[in-house]
Length: 488
Image (cartoon, rainbow, N blue to C red; front, top):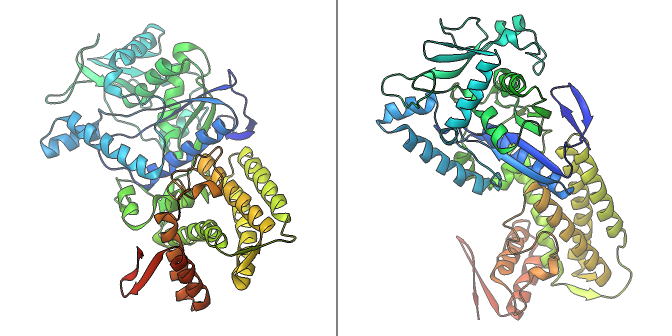
């Protein structure tokens, strides 16, 4: 299994420090506003990476932080005349709601900055003692020129970095690239006591302190968006490695940015779309699918048109699974079926996981899903014409459906509410049927298939479904607002 390591600038074989353990850290949100699609992309990418590593048998410890004190949070609190912590708590709570909708699993540890002030102060004290940081009038700065490897992640020297830097100006700094580890308090702002006076942590020190506490001095994977390479991740490396003398992270994985019309999606530009806006229009799986159709390192230009394309792809996938419920109602005949289905499923599973081992190539993995879906479509069309299917073909179709559900639910986090009661590891599609008659979920699925058949003017299929449901004690009524049903 290989990943592209930003630090080395090439694909490398993934070898954890202490297999089968894998330690992962990603930078979390600054809790001052709702999460947008750019956040969502990074969250989906690393959620799926974690799932895949667990599928491969690794024991993953995943840490993702919350920045709950920051200039943006403080400014929002002032604007709303509220306490800064009430702002942070509000948006952390909304973040959890967004992640539940998006099927992003919680991290194993989700530390907050305000709960780690002691650890942050210890990191800063250690850097001062080692000569890498200096105190000026109640503030502490990291001396970039003291760390000889500065720029190794972004592959630029200090002159280049300075030319295009997002550098905070301050007359207290010795050099322009030096960055704050501790900021002195201002009137009306939150602060904590420290050896340098009351103040609060600098952004770049928070993550270092939390990684050291929860994962140790060297971790396997540090992830985040491409925009965090400089200055945030570069500054993390400088502090951690200056302090410990050890490599901070063995593999640095960065997802590409989400853009809108070629411009980075960001709150500062006002061109962002929140996850909640997306949920109002689309099922969250459709956004997950859109993200996974793009290689994680490539830019993703978001548009509602692309969401529609993703929706169509999702419907195609969903219909292949729903067709199985209809096929089970057809006449089952003996005879030679399509035994190639088993080979197709084997081919799909082998290539799906092989593509993920090649720098986490989710679009190529999905292409194998849709090859199998296309094959299932041919079988469905033939069966729908004859209203019958061989028992061996039906079993093969069931085998394929179960493989798709198990693979996409377990690794990609998709289809979790299509069959909510199924266990990813062992459920077969046949087990999804209740033992005591037809379920309401299946009735709704059959009505959905019938509605689509009527739109295509395939009245033979529509009438057939109506009659089969009637025989099972379900009566349909077509109305201008849709089809209603009831048990007779």
